[in-house]
Image (tube, rainbow, N blue to C red; front, top):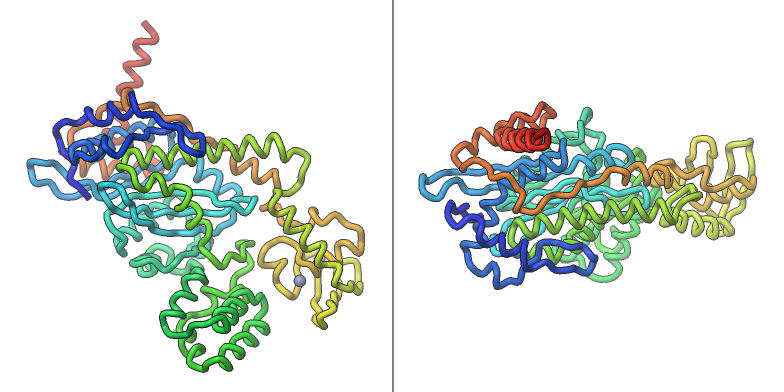
Length: 466
Ligand SMILES: [Zn+2]
């Protein structure tokens, strides 16, 4: 990361905010400048300098949000170097804690702006099976230290009581796995199967047969099917089984996943999708990028809230889940239900398989209902045989009511830089960091930045009284 300059502080960004407002494809009005505006190193550094004011503005406009900035070194001339910045909006935290499933995808992607660096992201999944951004950070590199710093802040934001509450999914990024050990030592970890398949190809096991068998083993929901697929793998080449032996299936096969999160995801799609949504922002200078991401998320929350209120009223479950329900109802036509009592059924299929469904416990021995919280085709067969409402058997985590609760929290608007309170010089950085940590722990706003904000508010109050 570049050093923050002390001179020429406001000139570059002032031009940005006043004359180069663009409209991006998602109809979000953002601070956006032509590349020429930031060819000069000085102007890029202006943005680093303004990060202090920006962090204070975020805290002031979005109370209880966590905005932590870390710096390093001070050569006595150019000031301290920016090291990393973490942002978790209170709106996102509240929505996640209320109704998102306890699954968190984590990823790091390269920033292509003039300053370089890496964007670390934590993304969850909302009641309509869409991505739900949770927190993000700009760091200088993807290392064990930077991941551990990110995970510790995330852990504090999520009020984690037990380490195994959340399931993480990742591509096993550099430094990430060792960082989990001290922060979430017993959290279930899933590794993206696409990433596993790429590693498999690199190890020399190439071809459609290997690929198909690996995916079948990953998609297997029962131990019996998983073992069968592994036998198939052994028939293709016994060395593949050896290669997979140090990759526990708890990390990549549904047959070994815990049913608690109600999520059977095999890919880190939520992070990949988020990274592609913000692709344009990743090429911009740091402050422009951070504002782009904030406005993207703010608009996303608002759009989702408005859409659900206007179009989903009267519906029990979210549209994408409704489509899965309808698909499983169609597939239930191939099943024959045999009733045992009011709740228990044997469900036979034309392929010769037979599973046990319990309508009271919302389970099927194929484990698909248990893993997702959505009745499988066997469950639907039993439900339809009694003319019951399928939607009544879908886990409440997919309800429109839950969706509206998740999205009822808003990221509040943020003033432009012309109204940002200028923060103190770089000298008290360490003090600010310490106060940030206290702020992060939910204590009163004591930091110097917040003091400045308080002073500004006091001045405004006085003016209003006059
Ligand atoms: Zn089933």
